[in-house]
Image 1: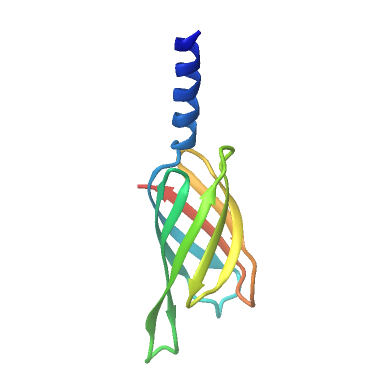
Image 2: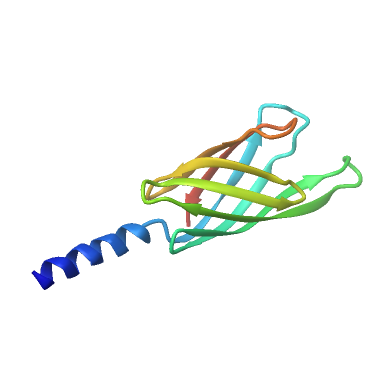
Length: 118
Protein backbone atom coordinates (compact mmCIF):
# COMPACT_ATOMS: atom_id res chain seq x y z
CA UNK A 1 0.00 0.00 0.00
CA UNK A 2 2.84 2.40 0.76
CA UNK A 3 4.33 1.81 -2.71
CA UNK A 4 1.01 2.62 -4.37
CA UNK A 5 0.70 5.84 -2.37
CA UNK A 6 4.27 6.78 -3.34
CA UNK A 7 3.48 6.25 -7.03
CA UNK A 8 0.34 8.35 -6.74
CA UNK A 9 2.28 11.24 -5.17
CA UNK A 10 5.01 10.93 -7.80
CA UNK A 11 2.41 11.15 -10.59
CA UNK A 12 0.83 14.23 -8.98
CA UNK A 13 4.26 15.91 -8.71
CA UNK A 14 5.04 15.05 -12.36
CA UNK A 15 1.68 16.48 -13.51
CA UNK A 16 2.24 19.68 -11.53
CA UNK A 17 5.59 20.30 -13.24
CA UNK A 18 4.70 19.29 -16.81
CA UNK A 19 4.74 22.94 -18.01
CA UNK A 20 8.08 23.82 -16.37
CA UNK A 21 10.65 25.36 -18.68
CA UNK A 22 11.40 28.34 -20.89
CA UNK A 23 8.66 29.74 -23.15
CA UNK A 24 8.91 32.45 -25.83
CA UNK A 25 6.42 33.98 -28.21
CA UNK A 26 4.50 36.97 -29.37
CA UNK A 27 1.39 39.06 -28.93
CA UNK A 28 -0.19 40.37 -32.11
CA UNK A 29 -3.25 42.52 -32.70
CA UNK A 30 -5.67 42.91 -35.60
CA UNK A 31 -5.51 46.68 -34.98
CA UNK A 32 -2.73 47.94 -37.27
CA UNK A 33 -1.73 50.77 -34.93
CA UNK A 34 -1.05 48.35 -32.07
CA UNK A 35 2.59 47.21 -31.96
CA UNK A 36 3.56 43.56 -31.73
CA UNK A 37 5.01 42.41 -28.42
CA UNK A 38 7.29 39.57 -27.36
CA UNK A 39 7.22 37.31 -24.31
CA UNK A 40 10.05 35.54 -22.52
CA UNK A 41 8.80 33.55 -19.55
CA UNK A 42 9.92 30.81 -17.22
CA UNK A 43 7.56 28.30 -15.63
CA UNK A 44 8.67 26.55 -12.44
CA UNK A 45 6.34 24.52 -10.25
CA UNK A 46 3.40 25.98 -12.21
CA UNK A 47 4.44 29.57 -11.37
CA UNK A 48 4.98 31.96 -14.30
CA UNK A 49 7.60 34.73 -14.25
CA UNK A 50 9.15 36.74 -17.06
CA UNK A 51 8.93 39.80 -19.27
CA UNK A 52 6.80 41.25 -22.05
CA UNK A 53 8.48 43.78 -24.38
CA UNK A 54 6.68 46.09 -26.74
CA UNK A 55 7.94 48.81 -29.08
CA UNK A 56 6.41 52.17 -28.26
CA UNK A 57 6.56 55.60 -29.83
CA UNK A 58 6.56 57.01 -33.34
CA UNK A 59 8.70 55.79 -36.24
CA UNK A 60 11.71 58.04 -35.59
CA UNK A 61 11.54 57.86 -31.79
CA UNK A 62 10.80 54.29 -30.80
CA UNK A 63 11.76 52.64 -27.56
CA UNK A 64 11.23 49.24 -25.99
CA UNK A 65 8.93 49.21 -22.97
CA UNK A 66 8.92 46.24 -20.61
CA UNK A 67 6.23 44.73 -18.41
CA UNK A 68 6.77 42.15 -15.69
CA UNK A 69 4.85 38.89 -16.21
CA UNK A 70 3.53 36.76 -13.33
CA UNK A 71 0.93 34.05 -13.14
CA UNK A 72 -0.03 30.52 -12.27
CA UNK A 73 -0.96 27.41 -14.24
CA UNK A 74 -3.57 24.92 -13.05
CA UNK A 75 -3.12 21.16 -13.42
CA UNK A 76 -5.46 21.32 -16.44
CA UNK A 77 -3.13 23.76 -18.25
CA UNK A 78 -5.36 26.81 -17.76
CA UNK A 79 -3.39 29.87 -16.74
CA UNK A 80 -4.03 33.37 -15.48
CA UNK A 81 -1.31 35.82 -16.49
CA UNK A 82 -0.81 39.32 -15.11
CA UNK A 83 1.34 42.05 -16.70
CA UNK A 84 2.47 45.10 -14.74
CA UNK A 85 4.48 48.01 -16.09
CA UNK A 86 4.27 49.32 -19.66
CA UNK A 87 1.16 47.22 -20.25
CA UNK A 88 -0.93 46.47 -17.18
CA UNK A 89 -3.45 43.74 -17.82
CA UNK A 90 -4.69 40.34 -16.69
CA UNK A 91 -5.76 37.59 -19.08
CA UNK A 92 -6.13 33.84 -19.37
CA UNK A 93 -5.17 31.09 -21.76
CA UNK A 94 -4.19 27.44 -21.94
CA UNK A 95 -0.86 25.63 -21.92
CA UNK A 96 -0.28 22.28 -23.61
CA UNK A 97 3.00 20.38 -23.53
CA UNK A 98 4.31 22.45 -26.47
CA UNK A 99 2.39 25.75 -26.68
CA UNK A 100 0.32 28.43 -24.96
CA UNK A 101 -2.58 30.29 -26.53
CA UNK A 102 -4.48 33.14 -24.92
CA UNK A 103 -6.27 36.43 -25.56
CA UNK A 104 -5.39 39.69 -23.88
CA UNK A 105 -8.44 41.86 -24.57
CA UNK A 106 -7.94 44.81 -22.26
CA UNK A 107 -7.62 48.30 -23.67
CA UNK A 108 -7.72 49.46 -27.28
CA UNK A 109 -5.23 46.80 -28.41
CA UNK A 110 -6.63 43.28 -28.22
CA UNK A 111 -3.80 40.75 -28.48
CA UNK A 112 -3.65 37.10 -29.49
CA UNK A 113 -0.83 35.59 -27.42
CA UNK A 114 1.04 32.51 -28.65
CA UNK A 115 4.04 30.99 -26.89
CA UNK A 116 6.20 27.98 -27.71
CA UNK A 117 8.32 25.91 -25.38
CA UNK A 118 12.01 26.51 -26.04
